[in-house]
Length: 172
Image (cartoon, rainbow, N blue to C red; front, top):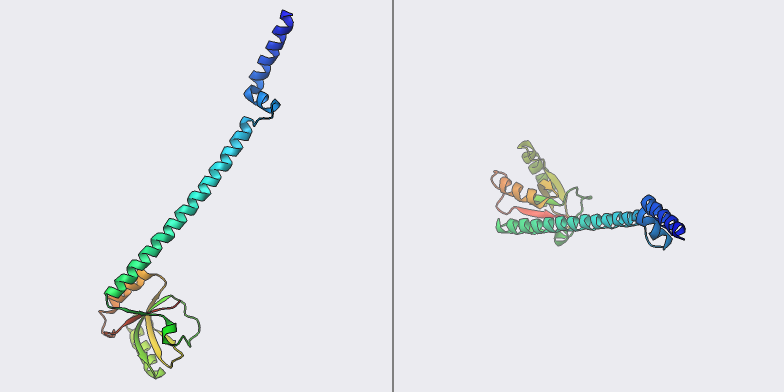
């Protein structure tokens, strides 16, 4: 009897040494260390994905706050900010950028084209923007970034071609 008990204990010891707890876990239907490791990896990947999503949302929130701060700064520079819909809508085909510094508005297209040539000669390529209400405006320094348009407005205001009533067109 002792030899059978000793043999059984020796066999159990060999099985535990060879497979450790995983053998007993698999026999009892419990997850093995490999299963636990896979689950831990899945949990870590999910946590990483959620963190990346949170980081992305924080970055968007910061950009929005920065955008609002620059828009407020533009208003403090006494820069009027208008949307094309407030002027009857655009007649021009799609504009490439979100923001334009408008330095002139004319009923006569030839006058607007003349200003475009003048500012282009000074290193500020002008954009001719036509509205449904019949006005042709000249925009410079197109940008999609409110910080850039703020910095450009401060620079353009120093130029001789910039009128006192310069304004910002927001193409939304």
